[in-house]
Image 1 (cartoon, one colour):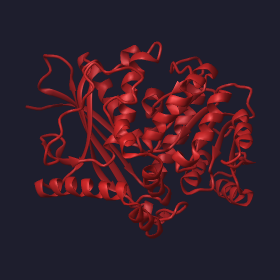
Image 2 (cartoon, helix red, strand yellow; image 1 turned 30 degrees about the vertical axis):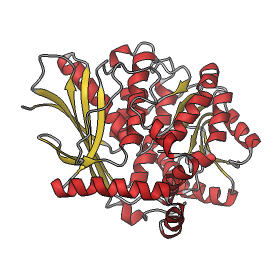
Image 3 (tube, rainbow, N blue to C red; image 1 turned 120 degrees about the horizontal axis):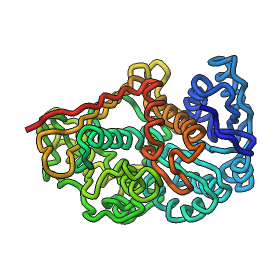
Length: 424
């Protein structure tokens, strides 16, 4: 399938390519995207960008090297020029709540498709509120959170719902995602984004952004999530022993927006809607009752301390990994993450059947983020040619990229097992 024809100079510009996540993304593009791709990398320092070009050429000398575009996130004129030159702008420049809005604004106003890898969900809600109407007018499709946060749980939920449709002809009821395995260390950029969230937003704003379906484009008839255990410990015959997950609010904002978008905003894809009685929660593996309760208490206490103690945040900024740094290439070879999930059918007649998914990635978190970002861009360049995806302009989620996106991720190393299982 050919790439989208357009009148822009580039198919893709990667902004922030010399940063930690940006370099992984540039390398994935160089190794795996079509050789006729017209692309550029952008940032403030040409010498650092040239190093990225050199690394990409080592990986794939047969590919035309990316062009270099100089741009500063502090210059609206630079960002507008970037947006006008490219069909899709990918940005890894964070923290997004500090540096991201000018990039979103430039893309929304100039009809440029956009993807980022933030996990700062209150900021995403602000951007939707400010720029979705403009994006709908210009046709810009904007995809925040196309990284390790929150693509895996969003994709897992999408394939679970698809399995129930194809096997049982049923809509989806309750979905539980278990962040089962994480053997990886965060980059300095991820740490900085987390700490910065409490500098930029009040606790009341974060709490409001965490409400069920707060980010959905349509109201849910029953805006709630499955009840929370007082101890924070859960036991499931399929998913095992689980506890509270620290990323649950981040990922819920995306999955619940997917629910609304698939119902209301994608012409021709109404059959992909999860269902009126869809509910969702995310938990993480626990080794037992004591471990589960301990995780719950530790997360609660730690969150309060980070949120209400600026001196602690200042200390953490100094002692933890700094922005631009992260696990070494040797270290990430040993990294792994795995999500498990189950989904009940909505309605009677299937009480003893569930859909089950296991998504596994062997390698670094930021390799996976690069995969999602680059293959998401390729999906827009190919699958949205003739309106197959139904994307007309606005803010979307990874699930809105559909099965083609998932297939591309699987082709490049994401392992997905999806099946029906019996339960009592």
